[in-house]
Structures are given as C-alpha cells and as structure tokens.
Image 1 (cartoon, rainbow, N blue to C red):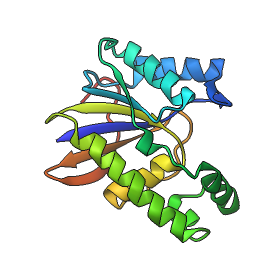
Image 2: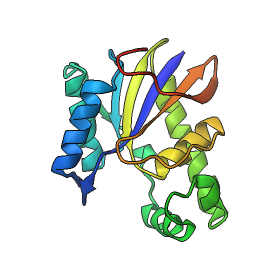
Image 3: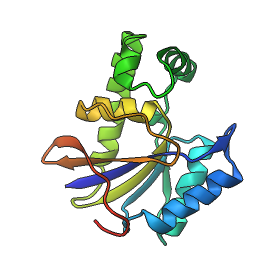
Image 4: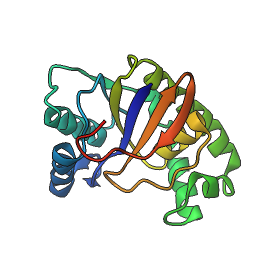
Length: 178
C-alpha cells in the first residue's frame, strides 16, 4: 500500500500564505501529521511551497527534498475559476461538470494521471504529502480514483491510497497514527 495526503494550502493573500495561513499550517504540522514520509511535494505555486516546507519541518524531515510536481497545476486556472464561480460556492467537480464537461473530463484525466504517478513513485507502505489547490486537487482525485470528494477548504486534506494498483479515497487518520 502507498498513501498520499493531498492538502489544499492554507489561507493566502495572492501567492503567499497570510500570517494566519502560516499559523494554520504550523498547527496542522503539530497535530495532524503521521511521519515518517517518503515524499514531500508541491504544485510549485509559492503558497503551496510555503505550506509543504512548514509541514516538512514539522515532520522533522528537512533532509528530504521537496519535489515540485508541475503536472498537478492546471494550465487553465482561469477557466477553473470561471467554472467554479458559475457553479457556486461549495460546488463539487461533478457539479462543475454540468457547467463545463470538457474541462472537467480533460483536466481530471491529466491531473489524475499525475497524481497516480506521484503515488506510484512512493515505496511500498510509503507515505507522502502533496500541497495543491482547489478545485484541481478534487479533479485529480476524481481522475485517479473515480471518486468525487467534496470541495477542500483551506488546510483540508484527502487521503488517497493505492493498494495493488487500485486507487481510492480513505478517511484521514487521527493525528499521530498511521
């Protein structure tokens, strides 16, 4: 089995975490991580980089490099924003599909393949952390698992597990457990 904790970054102002976002990420690091981790990744956006650095430090694994996974950052972010706005606050990717089916289908496939590749790169029984964005995290989960997850709030996480080539969403573990 392989485990990936896919986080949405905490509160931001532009492409940087706010002081509240930094404090929230530090709290997550103290209370909700299950080290050790074999992978720390980010989409490459500064706000995601900041959060994954905080989580890596909290896990006590600063010797492990952070990997940028640009394939998990959409090249059509403005289109996602427009669709999310049209679908309404709190819309799922399934509800966004009703607005722009082509976007959700194509992007879920691309993002899902990238998410699967990250998980498949983990060692057996390995655990990783990846920090990204909403709704593209949710689209990646849909593409990788076929499951629709609700919109992730800032700092929220979804656990994606691979077991014998099958990918699925699992409840996140209680803090400090595996």
